[in-house]
Image (cartoon, rainbow, N blue to C red; front, side, top):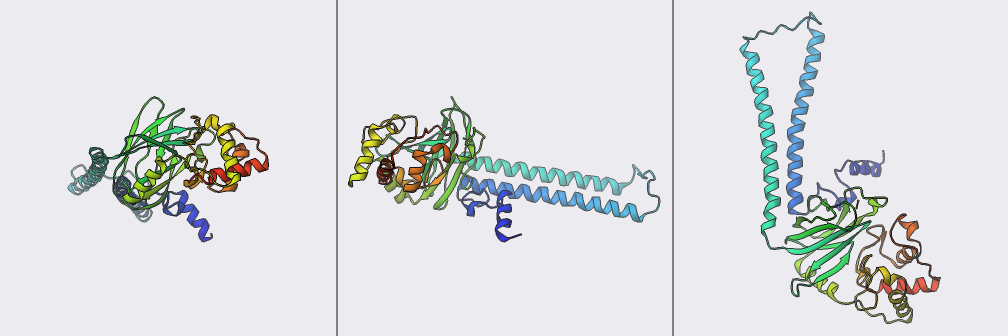
Length: 336
Ligand code: CUA
């Protein structure tokens, strides 16, 4: 087996995965670290008991083979004090193991609940088939700033994410940072995320929600607080105005053509609501909820033939001439 295949197998088993960018066992958040320690405690307690059971099973088999009178009724004396002591020892071991698991589980729940008492950055995440609408509360103005499919968090601070759904049940999970929680239509769930190191991570929908469930991912960027503030201030601004002729034509096509029925680009006439906000689309790392890396070619392919990229997506194909597709992708690629 090649090294790469071995690594893929380990990834499937959930013990690594995506270079650590999506692994509950490579914690980069307070909540995930606490859950990972509970995982290892359960692994240790249950593994120890499992090995003991296998050991005694082996011993029993070995003794049966090497002792005379195989098949005879076992001769158990109820007054045998050695037997009573052994049984008490086993019962104590089981009770002790279970007590460890209960205490560990209680401590993890407490760590997760404690974050709720802190002041936090407010974020709203709404699940759609098959992408994520994300709103950030501007700490200065109090206004909500809309984005999609990429979550930015400041390191060392708690972000409170209120989860809702626009259609079916989804599940929000950033394995490296915190536990998963469902997005349920008509209900609001709240999860706190407290990242402990900076970097890129991967989040995903963890509840089957239709044909493109597997393509409902999102990028998570943990920044320093100063970087986060700078990034949020950038997201609050209206879209950049294009300067070259092709991009200007692209803006006209986007803001007066069919794109504007579903998408908003703040500062232009495109104010559609059903699809993701495109005001700063080129600042994001991927297209279509983690389906394609961000590039002009990717944008063109996605706009002209979305059903080929993500069959079943709500995004309809947009028949554009090659020149128009080029103009639109030039415009969108400038929306940093
Ligand atoms: Cu949304 Cu699975």
